[in-house]
Image 1 (tube, rainbow, N blue to C red):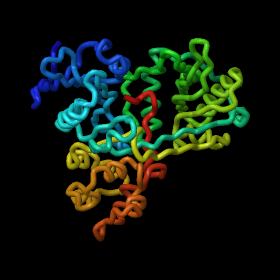
Image 2 (cartoon, one colour):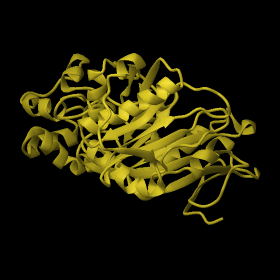
Image 3 (tube, one colour):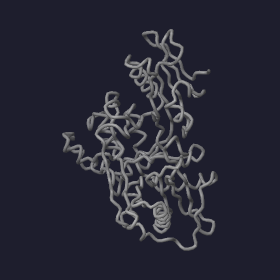
Image 4 (tube, one colour):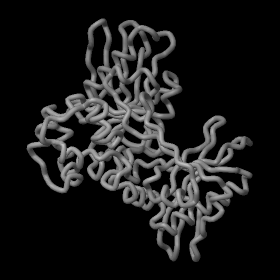
Length: 384
């Protein structure tokens, strides 16, 4: 096996990185993540002297993630595992810390979807809002079909249109991934007793108008109907796609449908007009989390985004932000940049500002769900 990086550590440990190989026999829980990686992926391993197999390993993905209108290269942790025989020896902690150290030489921020109580000790902070809209089927029956359109199953050649429309719809949404068709896996297949998904596209006179991806029953089991993704080019196309979902729900005798989207998207707008219930969760710990590795370089990369929010460049204030005169704690800085919290939220939590910076900071960090900055959200098909 060829390693892209190797390093001997203390205590007779060795850290390696590779982009090759299949590790089903070592890490069944990570095999699916490794096999379904939606972009360049690396397997990081910690090996111990005298032990034949790795004592801990994790999958790391690299992609472009938005902090608003600007997308920057980041890395996402897709899973961490330690074989049972090697647990409770500190191996996973050593591996995570070494992987973070290595990542900081390549990217300015890391992200993951983690369990509670683990990742804050490594510097990660929650920064993504968990959002869903629940539509009663009887209310959804008001959704109108669009005349002259056709709805057909999604096929491989639709990926360019799907990714293009997705990127257009979420062009300024923090934490959304800037998709590339070559890395987009599309609807997920059924796994064990879990529902798979089906994709459908809406067209009119040969023009691509939108798509929907929703769950299906599998292995003879009936599953709740949920919509993983729904993006229409305009209001009418979006409503027509919701009409199709409601039709499926009626056929499956469902009383409600859960849409995994945000209330400030076009899909969310149409659903709110149809009487959908909005559920927003701001996790205290776990779920979508991030870590700033290189504060200065990240903020320099985001200077154009901050200028967009403020309406003009503010070089003196930007340098003060970089230097830590404002928000010296990277956890709070990340939550402000992504819109997880607003300037006012930070103030109420005791994060006071030096005199004179309040006018620009109000524009930089208005909070997600405002006209200047959508809610921070990562769609399920982009999770790593």
